[in-house]
Length: 254
Image (tube, rainbow, N blue to C red; front, top):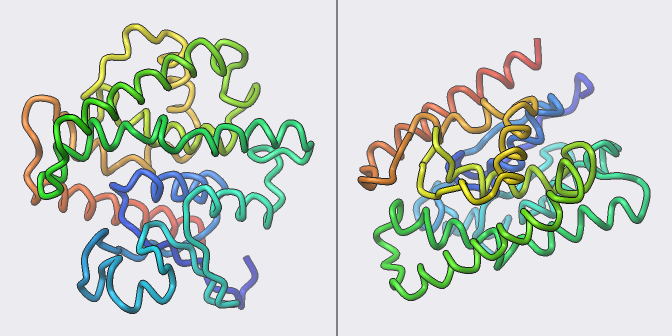
């Protein structure tokens, strides 16, 4: 980063799975950024439904990336991941070869309404009681996620060490923030025993630089399998994670 350029702004909160994916990539690549807390679903000044935020991202979702120097704004985590890799030439995580890149894109397109259902079926019902997610919707989401995990187990992760090859790529960052949040040591709400390839992949992904800092919010919150966490506990976990990210970014600049 040149002396005159400003760090990119990343709007969102650490507990958000898509926000964590972008945070992790930036930490992994040691790119300074400013994490701007945005409360999902809120119409307050710092909410994703506030008029000011909706001007940046009309969909009202998190994360959103903004480049202060150029005014460029981009929403949707997978679009942001690909943009950052394209902009900086990170071919290790987003290959230049069209066929290798297509394998990464394949997973990124597959992710939604498959692996992403983990949050709807297993996390949101415990974290966001206000959403009143019907039991039938939860069960359907759990079934879709479990089927997707079997697909990863017998398909992608049976063919290669990581989802799109021999090393972690954007597909792995996107998948892990959703799948990894469920494991023991974090929320502990899913039994991975029947999935040895997935378990091995989870262990491999824990070794990827930036993992621990990007997931402080989950280690701070801890096991929610028996009792849903209080909102104060979720808030405190986000605050702790924000502090760690701020510290790490400051270290990058020195």
